[in-house]
Image (tube, rainbow, N blue to C red; front, side, top):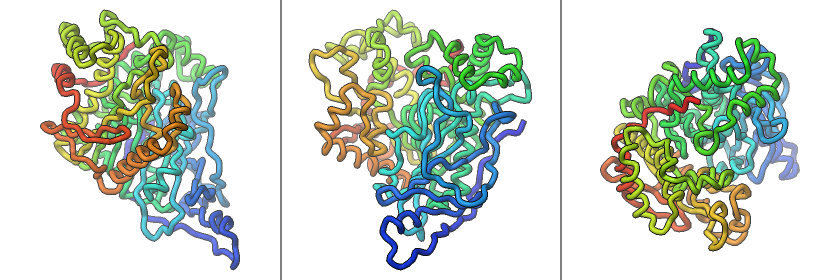
Length: 532
């Protein structure tokens, strides 16, 4: 099969063609005419958006439909005339209720660029969305890139990639011609980054100054790419938000997950899968995942160590210098697993006896570890303490391992997001949640869309000036890192462990939670093996 494993080199810069305006043209007409670009694929017309241009729904790869289903992404065919890039495209197929949503023709991206003169090319930030590699979309209003582009004077890109069975199921066991298909979602992301390197100069972006940033599943993909062959050919800097390399799957795990999916659907050949409609694929996916929930359900799909695109375990590869030419910033939220308690409040009551996910090498010390965590959280119920341990196992500690490994080679920075919707005494525990997974996103993008969180909209309405100021500081840090590899706090090193704490009043702490981090030293966090 054809493999998309060649990294793109910087392409020749293509200057934007701007139509001449008649004398006396209105400001609105001038803005509309300024939102034009000429690429080697064809001309593009975007839309003015509060002092910037939004180019929405640009194809970065051919539609993965028909004979291209379950195949690596293929190049876009150039178009004639002018492509109207004024509306976002539906995301990739995903189950968001009865019938699901999205379309298999989904390999599109969006570009937000300042309208100012393009004489000076601007840094580029490419966002990979989260959603457990089975949900999410670049069209999510929480991650609209317009405000970030305008405040930071950068070009922001977001893209969709194949999800679930269609993007992350290894079919090489059915047909060797499909070997590696379990990383097709990752290949989509690589194709999008290649598109950026080749064409972003047409939109005022500097292809030599690309920062990729992603949260959750998007962050895990970035971690996987950092373990690849010379990732600097795709991007110069990377921001990994709650997406540690520990969650990149082993090959055995990927094969077992695929076997489970195929057995669930009685699939005996790729032709059987090809005959399924999109809705039938989503129904099969739902049946295969039944019984998984919480953090475990969030890693059912994902990139895996295939020996080529992802040659080996992330931290091991990064420690050996795989990303020695890439600057990295990474971090987590303070209470990651509270996110899943929104959907299953019983997770907050998880007793220590049910904490079976702890690595076997640490299982004999489980009670000792719990006692340390509990001593640091006096008065909290057992379930809350266990969730703190689980958050550290899945997110914080492996994130710090990545940072420590990369700090040997390049400037590396670590943050922790501590702000949360204020607690209200007397409410159920599931309504009083901490700094959960995903909560930093409305602040990084400046959208302040907190509709998905308990009491989020009311909190924004009551604290808008303070939250806007905090969001502005975070946007400045992300864009400063993209521009100069310096977000504004000291570098992370194994001896100092400087960490930016994001709250209404930000601070820098050295080695926060060190006594708990040390409890995990006996485990090397190699790769996720979550065989169904």
